Length: 80
Image: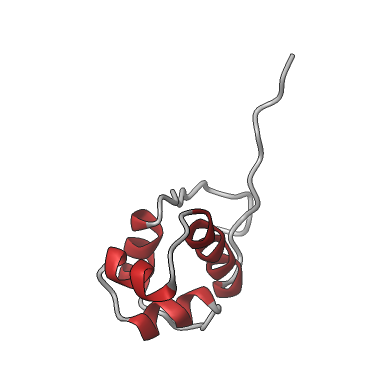
């Protein structure tokens, strides 16, 4: 029986940036074209992709969605 695929937990801005970079490269987009597609500035896109902490969450989620990434929140077993 096949097992369901597992995906790494998103734990840092740098990790999110890496996913965005891979998505951009797979789509053959330059930074400028990707930023335009996502309706954000070149600088914001570049900083997000390079893992700048403190990026606006609403814009970061919009970029992820525009690049075809799905971010899902699953409750963990940590402290409550």
